Image (cartoon, rainbow, N blue to C red):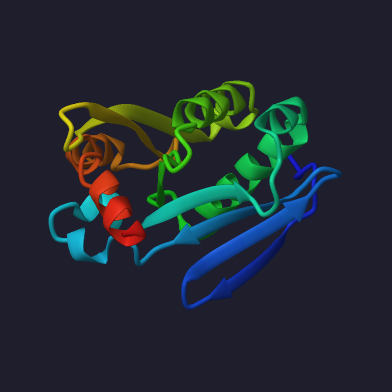
Length: 179
């Protein structure tokens, strides 16, 4: 299937970036493969071909508008599918829903709906978990973390096993990068 929106691809020292636009916004998909270098020995199957996946709009766009335009999600999943096809079936994309504005649950639900309604669930496996991170005040912050890979990834069971413990590392990495 072709992408509903035409997208451009740029590679630089930080990774691979894709962008596309519709009538309301310009969107970016970034894939960074050096984010998790320090953890490769502990999680070799998950991270050897692993990329950090970020999806965002370059200008403000109401999430409701993005949900109403199915071409946005189809274009994002086409980019993901193409990246996995080009890089190989062992490629794993890791993501965490942004928590900076306390809208991570909305992002998580939107991404779940996009995937469920996509035509790519025949070629891409997507799994996600809720990770509760203790806060200094005794409360917990929920992080939504997941991965995507080819349905033909021969190491999928090992990927799932490594992800089940690495998912607790990701929020710490993101928090340390922001501070």
